[in-house]
Length: 110
Length: 114
Image (cartoon, rainbow over all chains, first blue to last red):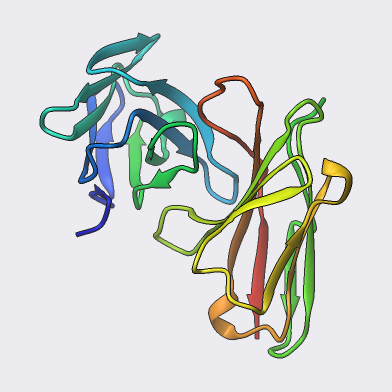
């Protein structure tokens, strides 16, 4: 079992839809949880990070962590075509290197 | 400061040749990371520097790979005797010393070995 599992998609939604992206992880030592967005031929950019169970909101984005289930989610409200990208979850066991999921490709159609 | 810079953006090389990539991190960041990303996969950790010291290396980093960060500023990643399996995007990232979760990535160097 890989340390971080993420459905690669693609996930296709119409503009304005609510998008749910998910990852599961296996190592309970992971403490910090991040979501990165990666456009084609670009490096990943940090969208959100959190270190505790619960929700964290930033504009249209909400990150959710359930440490008991080892499950993290990213919700995007009112999705826009500009949100079309690959979304990578990343998990960090303390202040150390990141372990990434495979990424989920999201396509938002106008 | 314009973020993390990587050079070149693209590199095509013949199998067996040596290649070197450069990364210039954000100036106030003392931690620098190299990751490799292949199509359809997330980035995989290669190596990590704190200042000029190379503190961690992945088992993915075979003896054909070497990384340096002289004077704790820019870093280079060299691949000797390239193989077709080395074709990938090589990503550099940096982060600060104080709890600064998450990295700032560069745009990467795309290597194609023919």
